[in-house]
Amino acid sequence: MPRLSRRSFLGVAAATFAAPALLRSAAPNEVVRHASFGAGGMARADLQQIASHKAVQLVCVAEVDATRAASLRQEFPDVKVYADWREMLDREASQLDSVNVSTPDHMHAAMAMSAMQRGLHVYCQKPLTHNIYESRRLAEVARASRRVTQMGIQVHSSVEYRSAVALIREGAIGPVHTVHSWSSKKWGDPSPRPERSDPVPPELNWDLWLGVAADRPYIGGGYYHPGNWRKRLDFGTGTFGDMGCHILDPVCKALALTAPTTVKSVGNAPNAYNWANDVVVEFHFPATNFSAPQGVKLTWYDGDRRPPDEATRVLGQRPLPDQGSLFLGTKGALLLPHVAPPILLPEQQFADYPRPSLEPINHWHQFVDAVRGEGTTSAPFDYAGPLTEWVLMGGVATFFPHTELAWNAEKLQFEGHAAATSKVRRTYRAGWEVEGLS
Image (cartoon, rainbow, N blue to C red):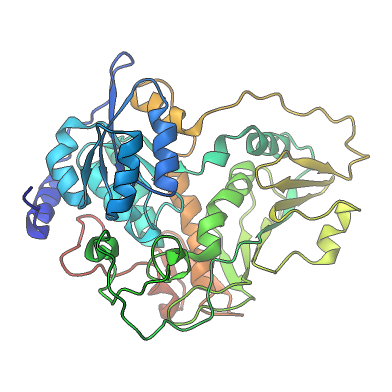
């Protein structure tokens, strides 16, 4: 099968961006023809959920690891497999309705943008992008092109998270002034990058795996592939990027947060290659209809860092969960463990408080239904883009410990701090530029 050259792909993408493809939506009685960027890990989970919708036909998959592709074919024997996602789009886009992007973070924006330019609807894993600029652009293009989009924060649709949002918005704990959010995960590495080059496994296309990132030698032993890329600056977004879009999603939704005014890291800093562990980042947000008049102070902790005792005293004898958020309001508090029901505090005070009665929602099927013209998605790029922007701002802040960075959302820059602003976007590897992003 002939390979699509990078030059020809860029030409197609540029032409498509100049004259957007006709928006395709499957009618309610039609099959949704779907493709996946990725075949293993979270991509496999996304595919299984999306393909479980009775209206979905999985047409093709792009996967740089032949072992993962072969494993997927055991479950979906009729699926076409490509190593190069650009070739898949070139050959198949006209026959597709939708895609899911479930790859390492650094490739999300390039794939999602290219798919939208081809008229396709996009389900993209969290974090939406690898940098702030990419998030802004994906949201803008999705809005302008009327594509159906959904970010893969599946807990967003859970009864637990939706219940917490409802309780906060109905004023159960009063206006919220402070939020503490945390994750015990450790997607960081204080060690320098090993000074070695290992043979690339025959099943892995290393050049395609690198994609938009700068060329470098392959390091084996799981250093990059399949999972530890989350720790590496050029490919992942650390614990904050991995879990922030999940755990901070109900905070953003419940309080209707807009862009923060300032962000400051008071924890560890990355080294030249890897994200840090034990991060602590403070945000200040403007007031909303659900906050105290002075706005909201939100603090993120990961690894071994946790909220101070004075903040968690309201829990009484209840242990702090490994991951979650604690909302502090003028009338009480709400503890939201990650993927568990919310708890109103003090518990005795709220023993008889009525809880919301909500029906379960399948986050993936919600996307498919919206592609078919039935309803809308709850985490479109219009919502997911701004959320991802300020989550990624926390990552930028970790490079400049104990420095309060003032954010200008309109200009996409940190006021008076050129070094921080330089991290708002990245330069793509030559030959991998994407129209609308590069």
